[in-house]
Each structure stands twice: as structure tokens, then as C-alpha cells.
Length: 91
Image (cartoon, rainbow, N blue to C red; front, side, top):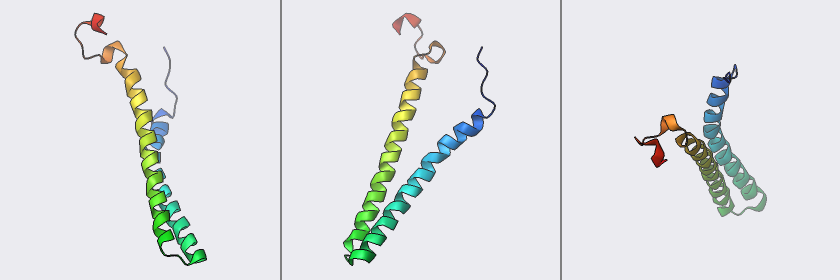
């Protein structure tokens, strides 16, 4: 029998919280980059390009978190106790 680590709840909570933080950080980095590009070049639309980059980065972070969670759930679905089928031979 494998014993769970002492701080498992903290690690799981931090992993779940990290998605929200990474979304905010990606958007802020994009806005900051767009602002700097606009200030240095004087071209106004570069700010909106930075915003789009930040939103794109946030969407990419969400997609990566989805793929990671799907992989974990697919592994759980293979376990017999989480099977929704009545006959284990159908697995």
C-alpha cells in the first residue's frame, strides 16, 4: 500500500491554482509587451497585437491544462472501480 505524500493537498491545490495565475500572467505579459512596442515605435496597433498575443498565450495554457487533465481522467477510466460498465469483460 502506497502512502500519499504529506503535502498532496497543497500540491494539487497549487496545480489547480496555477492555471488561473498563468492566464492572468500571459495576458499581462502580452499587454506589457504591446505597450512597450507601441511606446518605442509609435504605432498604435502594436498594443493590440500584444493583447492578442497575451490572449493567445492564455488560450494555449488552458489547452495544455485540458490535455493534462484528460490524460489523468483517461488513466482513471481504465481502473475497474471507476468503470461504468456492469460486465468487466466488456472493458
